[in-house]
Image 1: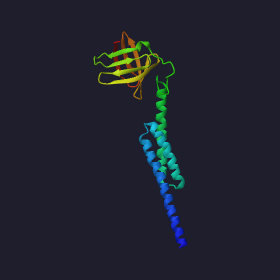
Image 2: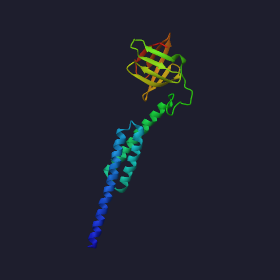
Image 3: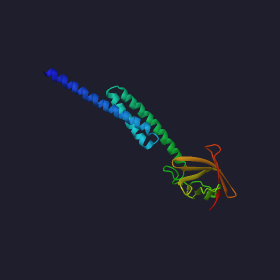
Image 4: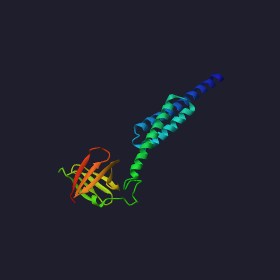
Length: 195
């Protein structure tokens, strides 16, 4: 009878420990999957990836199983992608006026000739407005976008808009602004100074 109770207790303990290990491994796997899926949102994905690795390692220490290994691999992949996205964000932000980690307290380089309102010369009332503080707007009466801008070098204009960095070459001649994309060939726009 005692031997039977002891065996039953050992079996129950093994079942409980296995269940806990499987839960830990499963949590690691789920967090790993989520971290990879949302990796473009690095601020969310980074902590999820770290937690995925922690849970997966915890699950592997108690019992080697494929779920823990998959969670560990996905957590590491999510971590690598998240760190890459974060690095890109910080690099773009560092170079832009008024960026979160960027040039709030530094003098931004602007071109006085760009200041003011420029209207697309095709007559569609699409305008750019460049302000002295490195901010601006662009668009038409249907949609206006705000952006930050600066001139890092002669004839180069960087516009940070909605999390994206646009790189333009520009020339100004006789109150006419010509923008030519440095990222996409043959993309060129001309604007006339209005105000």
